[in-house]
Length: 262
Image: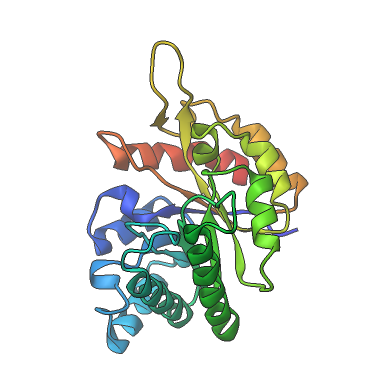
């Protein structure tokens, strides 16, 4: 089987684009995930800018694992839904232009009752996006965490498309009370991309929180054994959303995970 590929989410470094790419090269990771915002927004990045970005990646010997598509609201929200769907569609097209043909997205919590207005909006929105993804060959990796792996797998199985899958985030699952290893098994065959974050669960003396890799409650040996069991052979992208020195945390996280990925 192919080995797992280790990368970092550029935004976790807290650096401008070019220094962030240089740091990723120094860390000897295989690739990066970057958000399609600001200068890399599909509405800002011209065709020449897209060529320049692809060239930058080649110069730094990095692959683009996926484009992130951060949203203020989920696909169940009525406010600005049409504009939100159009932006996601544009990010998907940009992902096809830049190469990874994958977009990581948070859609909101999967609804319990299909007859609710929010549930209809989410289903209609995902159907619209999936049709575009199938047409241009781009996949949507939905963030895990707001429901169990089993619930998300059942929901995705109700769509007649090949482009919908998940971005597996073990910390997000654990922070919301779900077993990340069992959820990974329940999502077998649907995992397109994976993040690597760590966390500590809530206790009587502290709130749940994200922590540097290797300092939390994720059993990384069990996690990678589970990925091996379900034959996942894609990207593992180190992400750090909090902390006073995220750059150092990512650097240490790369060294920590290399022993599992090698």
